[in-house]
Amino acid sequence: MTLKEIKEILRADVITGEDKLDIEITFAGGSDLMSDVLAFGKPGILLLTGLSNSQSVRTANIIDAKAIVYVRGKRPDDEGVKLAKEHGIPLLSTKFMMYATCGLLFSQGLPGVSDLS
Amino acid sequence: MNDEYVLSQKFKIKGGDFSNAGRTSTSIKEILKEIGIDPSIVIRASIAVYEAEMNVVMYANKGMVTLNITPVKLHLKLEDEGQGIADIDQAMKEGFSTATHEMREMGFGAGMGLPNIKKNADRFKIASRLGEGTTLDIIFCLNKTGNK
Ligand SMILES: Nc1ncnc2c1ncn2[C@@H]1O[C@H](COP(=O)(O)OP(=O)(O)O)[C@@H](O)[C@H]1O
Ligand SMILES: [Mg+2]
Image 1 (tube, rainbow over the protein chains, first blue to last red):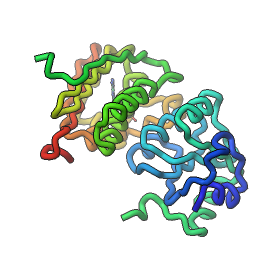
Image 2: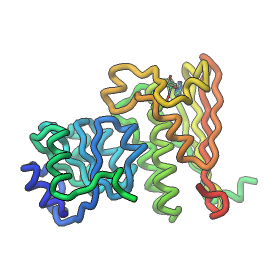
Image 3: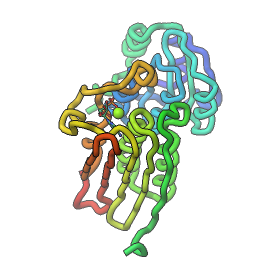
Image 4: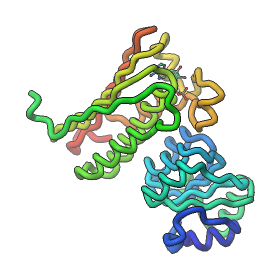
């Protein structure tokens, strides 16, 4: 599904990357722990996280994540937004908590990173 | 010996500087991409050096990353001055961590860093002297045969 569809499903705000909403997202993974993301993440992942400091964006960039959705209304700090613009990583923010965010996307057919063969 | 290097570059890391943590790894990733290193090695090396950089920021006073690339290997050496590690076997265990609350809030400090560095590297060496510092050698083979 496209990032635009994800934005609609999650009723999310776009913090940066309005011009990239047509990118195709094929799988996602969620964690607040960047060490976990670095261990399980795969290039192309949609990262769902509640960690709103700039390490979330640095981590996404390191693993070639396609975009970040911040859950439970979190928004990244200014440094994070600046970095995301530099690296061309779209950032979205949804009011849903982690469990509901994952459930909504999963039920619409978006697989998790662990479902990839 | 030096003239066989394709590239050799040093980067400084400041201990305790959480707001810049990860900057060096991001620069190294850009360099690796630019010079055309295999994308799967770029990711593995970037993950390893990022966890290693975070450890210097979290546990050491200062450190230095040396990036050496030859036609056959990519070598990341991290040398830091700081508290060092008392028991390396224990530090290498998944889940062992002495991280503070502040470090956990950064998304690190789950005791997964060193094991993940080792997992990503083709070769990995760690040495430490208590009260002096820690050295990591993280090596990736650039010719197909030695690859993971
Ligand atoms: N460069 C270092 N200097 C001193 N101690 C370190 C260093 N790197 C790791 N350690 C010690 O080893 C432990 C495990 O490291 P790691 O596996 O990266 O997990 P984490 O950083 O999440 O605690 C750390 O909690 C710390 O006690
Ligand atoms: Mg660590």
